[in-house]
Amino acid sequence: MRKFHPGLSLAALSLAAVLALAGPAVVRAATPREKPTIVLVHGAFADSSGWNGVVTRLNRDGYHVVAAANALRALNSDAETVSALVKSIPGPVILVGHSYGGEVITEAANGNGNVEALVYVAGFLPEAGESALSLSGKFPGGTLATALAPVVLPDGDEDFYIQPAKFRDQFAADVPAATAALMAATQRPVTGRALSDMAGAPSWKRLPSYVIYGSADRNIPAQTQRFMAERAGARKTVAVEGASHALMVSHPDKVAALIEDAASGR
Image: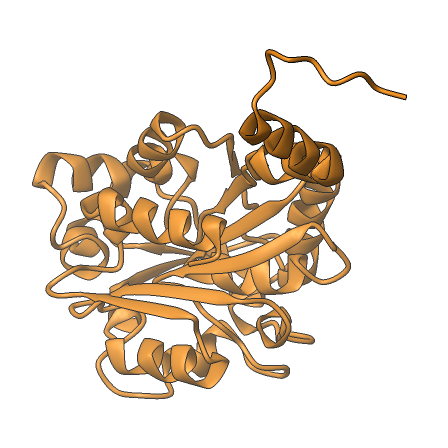
């Protein structure tokens, strides 16, 4: 039988009893939730460096970030590459896709139970059977077709670049001219096949989705992006007034903030 110690007050005994009953549950409740890894997937006419401003902000806030290289060759193979990367990451993952990268993350999330949310940064949210080409022409306002420069490939497909002289107006109108010139020179081309490949089962039907886009986007019209966000029942949608297609470069703070909302389930 435990002896009563005269130095112990009734209040202390009561607290000790509560802690004894609660036991490990009290410890578990005090343990902070593991922060998910953020996987960023660039789209066409860009590369991973476009995420630099976003990565800086996420790292500052304690997130581990991987900016994946997107080959821009074909939807299935591009998605399989990102899916393999996700499978190699222990713990929860937030997938973030820009432009065509939105299609890639939609596919890559399938079969990966550690993906907790999808974030679309001026990105495509395709339904099964849709492609980047079919969605970009769904509503008026896009001018990408007149800005492209095709390069015929040995297999008969084409690589598409944005003409350097038109790059800033088309892709990055709110980005400083010197930065846009660098982006134009280092842009990654996308194949015609990748743009026309049809999407499979949309993972946004089972995962929470978050959308951010610019009102002055000339690649994917704002009306198209609103339509896709509403159709997906996006948990949060942010329209940045006057922002271009490259809003991860021009507004990295807003993009990072939405990613952190997705990471915390807000």
